[in-house]
Length: 405
Ligand SMILES: Cc1cc2nc3c(=O)[nH]c(=O)nc-3n(C[C@H](O)[C@H](O)[C@H](O)COP(=O)(O)OP(=O)(O)OC[C@H]3O[C@@H](n4cnc5c(N)ncnc54)[C@H](O)[C@@H]3O)c2cc1C
Image 1 (tube, rainbow, N blue to C red):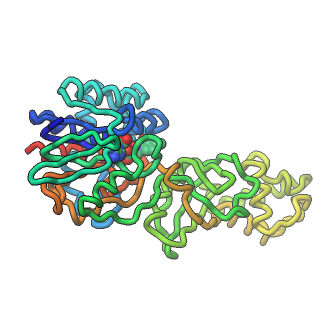
Image 2 (tube, helix red, strand yellow; image 1 turned 30 degrees about the horizontal axis):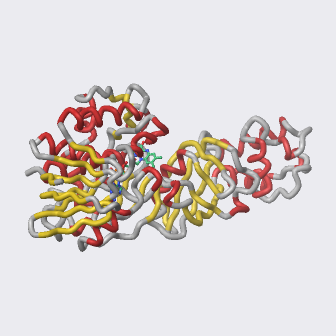
């Protein structure tokens, strides 16, 4: 089979690239290794698809030489994403912190809309075509599947994603294809992911969910603070706030989190509250001192961390120094982050095809003429909150527009 343009990967970015290229009248084939396209998009945003974020700009993204893609993010911005999807019948609904979802609340609407648009335009979709090799011969590319099926294309876009959630399709093979064509790939790490901590720092807390503010420190510097829900697990921590802040992991060494369990109150207010509780609960022991204020098990755990050895200690015996230590632990519980839980659980892959080797206006390779890249396969990743799909749409649009020129 022959085609003018082949897009490797029927994910978010590949679909946007294919639709955009096809609108210029070119023949486009999508080669997708799974039995269906857009498998990952279907589970994004807990099945609701956080399609973009109205606040997205270059400051939300990371990667070596990240500033080079600022013009791409500006050329196809969140409003362009919303206009594009509105044009396909997806009504966009802005929620908290600029996060945009389809009003239907279903990621499947986004999948359907992209599929219908590709069909309407006549984009060919070849599923179960696992691209294992791309060769450039003269002005043509020869693309081989695992079963040695062959397609010839004038131009190629690699939109094969990263290597997180490999069962949904993106298993890192895009990086291998890029490397075989002469590209370099920067260090790959999981991001937007659960984190492992030292076991004793979360022992017995498994299953407890609580709203907190977390400040990340790395290389002995304060990096950022996020608030949201924290979930303790047997290996460490998870929950929204952890996903949001986990982007620091590929960027810094010696990462520590400082957890504020009492964000509502500053230190002095908390001190007064604890003193008042000492009076109010003078007939109880430390086992119940935090009853109604913080999760019971967590309160008991933090009491011990603060140095109170026995929960049988009468509340009336708390001294001023102990109350101050309790305040400090409640406001500044430090935990050391050892690692992530790996690519299998990570929403995105940090690292990818080096931006130094890609034309930042067109996303064409500087090494192989006629070869383009888009989406997560490139060394670009964003914070949690719609930023990664925004990159997939924006880069897909730019690659699709330029590949068709
Ligand atoms: C659980 C989860 C939730 C997420 N939620 C959000 C969210 O709400 N908002 C947000 O902005 N981001 C979210 N993300 C991140 C976002 O989904 C990705 O950043 C985005 O899908 C990347 O798009 P892509 O097209 O580059 O890659 P992908 O969507 O991964 O698509 C790549 C495609 O290429 C195919 N492929 C790979 N290799 C080959 C090959 N060799 N031959 C043929 N086909 C191949 C794959 O099967 C896949 O279909 C989430 C991710 C996960 C895992």
